[in-house]
Length: 346
Image (cartoon, rainbow, N blue to C red; front, side, top):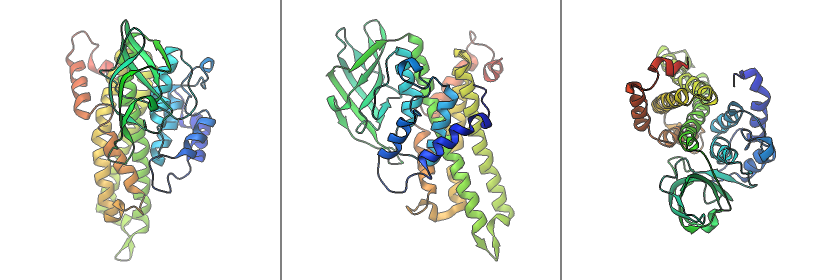
């Protein structure tokens, strides 16, 4: 888990080579990117080898997701690598082939004694395209991980602000293709994993926004010199870099805490990272568009692919307010370790 950037470099380069410079055409699905990621085993890094995964670490899976966030790739890699595949591993279920996604929140979904599912799961990323959706249902004896073929459910299509598919699944007596009971702790970690996936994605998108801004201010000239030479521009670029760094560092801290096995440490660190990420995402997008100006929102410019995703992801996996409330509750909980101890993990 303490892997350095140098240790992760081969994995980073592999993911970058697969995903290239990001999407070059409009659309909601990049079939070639998914096929390449799946063939390379990058969708199931954080799954035991005995279940068909890579037997790698959470940090390695997160690095692939960060690159995907940076490239604005149109596939559910965060849902597959950090949520769905992990849920299947926790349940001892093999990972099915084909496009895989997972719901970050499937509250209200129930499974009866025969395994049949009832409930509506809202805003499932890429549900209309996936061949398998991994969900967590309330079973007669506790939480159950289930795999659903979305073609057996009623799908109501929707999108987020970035145009990524966010579809509702109505499951009325639908039988899963696989199911297994899990410990209640898995349900608690699912919420953390969902939030963490958005922090990691934002770290990637934020870095791309910064890179695009740096290129723009170095190339754009006013009064005979690049605008990067102007003090006001330099100040804004410094603020932007600081916001991106805060997201990146909060993601690293949350990943470390989640992999530690300390549930209290993980809950506090992920909540803090989610609040930091949501707030910083707003600032990153605002500063980036201020510096790039109107061209940044056009289809021809890449900036909007990052900023619209930052806006959309900050409200997925729990809003900033939700996680701020969770963090505050932990801070005043007399049964929890002191807040500073929780934050730094000592």
